[in-house]
View (cartoon, rainbow, N blue to C red):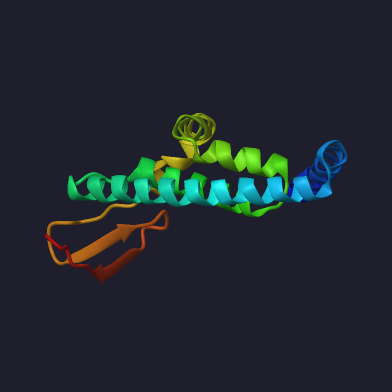
Length: 151
């Protein structure tokens, strides 16, 4: 399933790069790709730190940073897309870094996959009251460990 997507995206990127290169020149096209990568990397850094701060705030308030974790995944994928040379992947990567489109991607993913993400067989139970942590997996295995909370 992924192989055809990679082939189609690569061919589309080559087509767009050649078309833009014919329109504005080869050097200008290369400079434009470098400029979009630079802008994307700056935006990637800013949005990554912003999401990290929101996750730390959620943890400090005693909430699970689930939304922030999804945002982190979208930001990671967006960063990979921005590192891939080409205009199509740059546009998709930049869309993943914009907060409004990122929330759209996350909501769309959750609408399609909510049952799999939040099913009982995949649930994890964590005991935060004592000095040990217990997780129950779908095989009813108990895994014991230790954790420390910084206050």
